[in-house]
Image: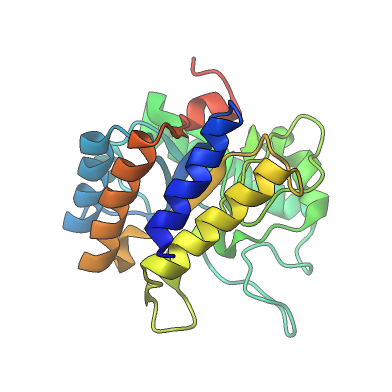
Length: 247
């Protein structure tokens, strides 16, 4: 069975169960204005799919963010601070919680100034890594939500967490598009797990993209994915509604 047929079958199973399959979209690494960023935002507009644009606060430019409807934080500066033996992270174990929270508060203020009413204070940490001790303290830095990768587990009080589950970049395979079959397999796998109750059914299935790395095949895949899912009755959630009510 092809990946598209498997997806159609799974979405049909949701409909047969009287349920709506919910999804959401996050794109990482926004900074300066570029043709590919403009293409991303135009795709979201044309397809009518809400997008959470994760921008790097220290590198972001106001003109790049202006066309976006929802801008969230992609860390502070996206600099790898990992100590020896640690995986890549902007928030290493060697940094105190207070220092990390101070950096986050400053980055939040800068991005809020650049994005204005389009800014949603949600943190998507670079490499999807944030040590757990910082999670419940995020509100103290003015951050109201968290998005990482993988089915969410326990949620910290007062910090909504909505993760992504389908990364379309082959990070260990040349940093290109993973291909339709691999991407659709990830998507179907999470939808099946939600429908069966083996993961949190209330967490929408999250699509993770990186516009700067997309080739033509990736762009074609996204356009078809949005068309196929919406035609089959799936709903693409608005990030504002996932994390908070928009002012």
